[in-house]
Image (cartoon, rainbow, N blue to C red; front, side, top):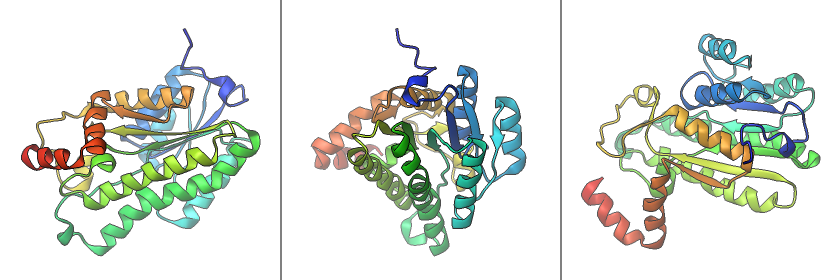
Length: 262
């Protein structure tokens, strides 16, 4: 059986370099811990909180590269530092940084709209813009985006967050066509609710009975598999793929059910 924890051949490097954003907590930290446990990776960890990020770096043997991805200068500095630490290469990007906001769209402050669009979508697009050319030139690499079930079907009270994650889905699909002949794989991992500080930080706790939040480590396992196999899309938990397919095939039926139960 293929060992998915050691996908060295996919990168053309003995110890491939992985840049993980959002690594100071939640899914990003869980991805760093999973890859550190697998061994063989050179981990570059990005987050906004230097203290928490340094602690994750200490636990995982990674290098902390704090930066605010909402700042264009911060994004460019991060890529320069990552390429310096990686001796000219970044083999994999795991775009895990993201923020949320819950409530009626009519009550959402303009500055909060802009920050979600910037951090969740624009910053990811620009990081890929800066890192993808090197991967294409080397004919090896992985882009793994952390999306959300909300981007696949939409969620009441999270219109802008869902829009940013839906944008990532279209971005991943489009990129996949462009790099099909380059041996660079573009994946998107689509979790439902995840047991992380995300809900506390967005200012509204998770209140639904279903689906229950899954551990961040379960999402990290899907990211690890995407890095190893280049799989295009993964729902976490996997059964969430079923409502996504219903939404795609029979959107009217899905909306009726969502209004009744969601």
